[in-house]
Image (cartoon, rainbow, N blue to C red; front, side):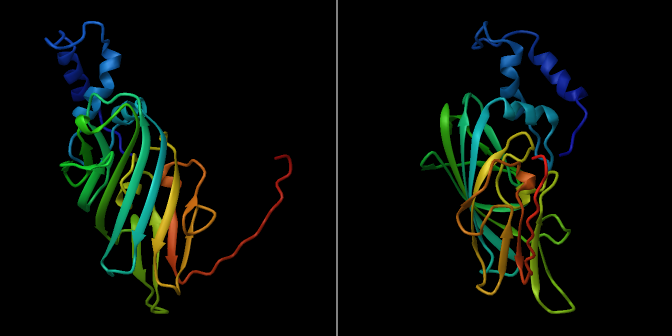
Length: 241
């Protein structure tokens, strides 16, 4: 996760806090307004500041990702469908969902397709399409395979001529694989489905491959690999645990 200086950010808050706006509730404190302002002031860049992460953490909980990846339709691009379910404690301001370098085909919020702002770095869901309580956001998208070792990396081994894929999601690369709240303190459970050649071995941090739900983990610890992998497994007894 990339962190940036706070000097300009804090100055903006200072100016905003000099006096209440005409429609502002006089009883609303600066700390109550901070999550709204942090999301609104997010710049279009491949980064998430500490303040933005804290603001999002303050309003989101009980996150679950239902993920589908198509790895057979193209050798250059993979397609995905992600359903994000989460509880929201404040729905007065837009919500951003991290997704870097993708082509977004559609976004459905709580059952209705919406016009959303996607700037190449994150999706912005308008406040009017959010509710207090449980929300469901579905995103259909495509993304080129990464070639720099991050996100979902695909390569062909020159020695055996076989194709391998693997993920590298730390510290802020999970959003190159699927739309997410890509920060370590927003843990989630996962359901995973993968469309891959029958001859491939698909391995993930979940206990299985298709429709397995993981324990609650951070986005960057959720990993998956595909290809002509060999699987080695051992069981060790941990004394004192």
